[in-house]
Image (spheres, rainbow, N blue to C red):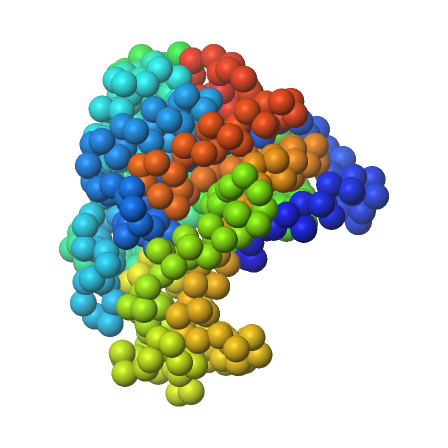
Length: 453
């Protein structure tokens, strides 16, 4: 997805839902507000770890500063990813990705003690956890944080991750959501204090809930699947769905689709909130922001990273190629990109993709390094511009009801939220589209979700 610039902001601000072919869904009532969350990815290709001011990706101080800044900015949630295995490249651990991530629930339990209202979201895998054990750990976090816990439900079926658990790819790709839905059902029944006797296709469970419910009832459920199967799963089970569709037109289309699926599942149109992932490159003026964007891309992607990016899709050693030269003129050795570099790089049809890349790079006169830097901003929504122009753009998103919020991946850790909280948030509050204080003390309240019975 291309970066969103000041020029697009001006064009978008002139339109209204009634003026276009993409009105809001008739069953959906926009809240008129937008919320923010922050995604601490840890090892990733989005953070400029080489830039001045970059911190340690596993140090307590990095997590502490980021979450306290987010809470000062009335962010709804602090979100942690999960890594169940070191990423690999060309059959060996990826040199730029040799540090793992701390366990999300352990870290969030510690962060709960230094915060009061921000939500605490842990990514946890349904394939490589036990439902009774995970339900108890999530409920414990919810109780200890006084109702601020959430679970980002992820599924895995590949043998590459499974080898870490001596299980291999024992679950078929087509069954992963069936497995996950039964898993979530067991967890919810435990949270509600029910006796569980689940005799399912993938596992058998007999257990009883023993902990009291938190003030929000039970952890909020997040989900990130955007395939048709993933969207249906979210429509049936989730409170919040992450999405990669942050530009306005795609965001509205995605809203329509999720509302339709949610209604078909027998839930209300507002049952599932939408939080696309986003990157912000901000400055006092649009021109300064564009200069900053170029500098950030240089910090994120160096010559080695550029070659490694292409190797993921070519499936072959490309170190002999000059990063300042044209894209390789050889065909890929693989038909489809694999899973070993993470979800953002997988299942691309290599022949078609690399052919299109060569044509694009040749047409634009881009070297390998320049092309790789241009791709860095295309894997998610990048909002680039002055504080005022980006604030106006987000206000338009709120008026449309296209999204409920944005889950920000800071380009710098731990100081990457400072300009957002100090400059952008006040401008959003002046426009009346961002909360000036927390609605309550539970995550469910601060997301505007209905209370559980």
